[in-house]
Image 1 (cartoon, one colour):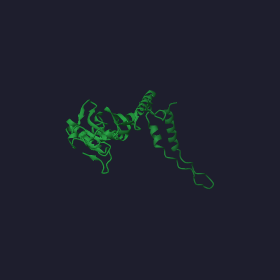
Image 2 (spheres, rainbow, N blue to C red; image 1 turned 30 degrees about the horizontal axis):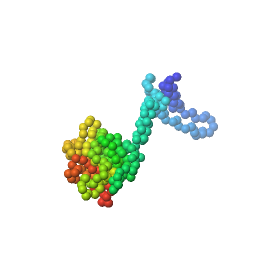
Image 3 (cartoon, rainbow, N blue to C red; image 1 turned 90 degrees about the vertical axis):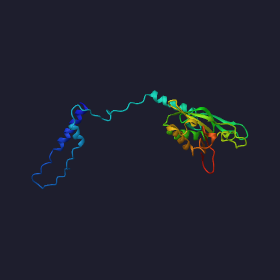
Image 4 (cartoon, one colour; image 1 turned 90 degrees about the horizontal axis):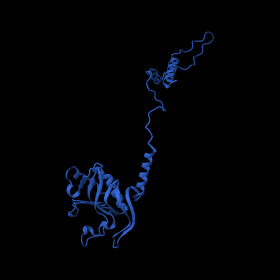
Length: 256
C-alpha cells in the first residue's frame, strides 16, 4: 500500500470519528453528567491530506530531496591543500607563506633576530620574496586583506616589492639615522598587478581615475596597521612607492 493511500485513509477515519455524536442520555436512574471530553477539532493538516489530489507527491523525512554528499576525493583534495599551506606558512599564520630564516644580518644595528622570508600574504604573491620580522609580515597580511583587496575589488594577484631588508640609512642619506629597512621592519611597494594582467603603479596612477583613487585608499588604510606610512604626498623620495614600516612611536602612527 502506498504512503499516499495510507495517509488518505487515516485522514478519512479521523474525519469520520469527528462526526460521531455523543452517547444518548441514560434511560431510568439518576442522570449523571456526561464526562466524555468534547471531540478534538480535526487537524488542518489531515484536512489538507484528505483534499490532496491523487498522485500528488508526498514527501517524508526519508523521501525529502537532499543535497548529495561531496565526493571523498573533493574533501581529501581540500584537506591536502590546507595541509600544504600550513606546511609552507610562517609566523603561525596560514595566510603568510614563506620560510623561517632565523637570525639574519650584519652588525651595527643591521640585524633581524628572528627573520622570515615571505613569498605571499593573504593569497597575493610578492614580486620578490622579502626579508622581514613576523610583526611586519602580520601587518602586511592584514593590510592586503583588509585594505588592498577591498579597494581593488579583490582583483590583486601580485604586489611589486621595491625594497625590503637593506643595511642602510633613511633614504640612503649620509649621516641619517638607520632605516627601519635595516631592522627588517619595513617594505616598499611600488605597484599592484590585477587579475587581468593590468599593473597599477604608484608613480603613474596615483590619484588618477578609479584605480588611482584605489591607490589613495590603500595608502590611507595602511595608517594604524603600520607605524609609518609614506607615499607621494610625503616627499620626492617616495613619489613612486609606498614605504610601510612597523616602528613604534609614542605619539602614534606617522602617516604622510
